[in-house]
Length: 175
Image (cartoon, rainbow, N blue to C red):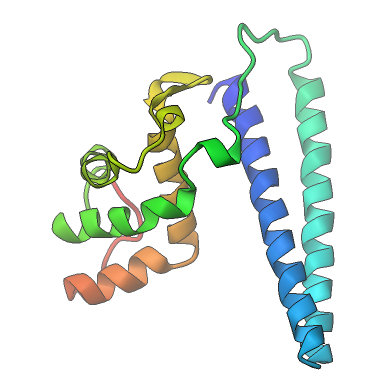
């Protein structure tokens, strides 16, 4: 993993934590409006833990910067603004459809090929650009792989493919 890949991973993680924090805070506010104060309190405590965790990640990000401080980047990794790229969640259904068509498991390249066929018309111009940190990987491919990871962590791939493919055991990962 290159220096800029680690830097980008920190940025993606912090962005995802911020999104989670916003969601948990919204749920807490809704629970309070509904008079479910115990639930609201639990959600606020969860929000506080997420916020503390994000703070520790920012500290680790700064520490990482000091560890590799002497290294110079040849180019600055530039993240595409969120509104300019196709949201990661958009890849969920095409990934599942590709895996079902491929029998429940497949190589990453085979899945991405099918996802591209389904997503081609929906992809934005910035999605078709290479990543600043890896010119061989297009932004949409990277976003699809991050979405796949999110789906694995949520147990979505296992649950849906288990039912759709009628298997008693399915691998949770794309090989």
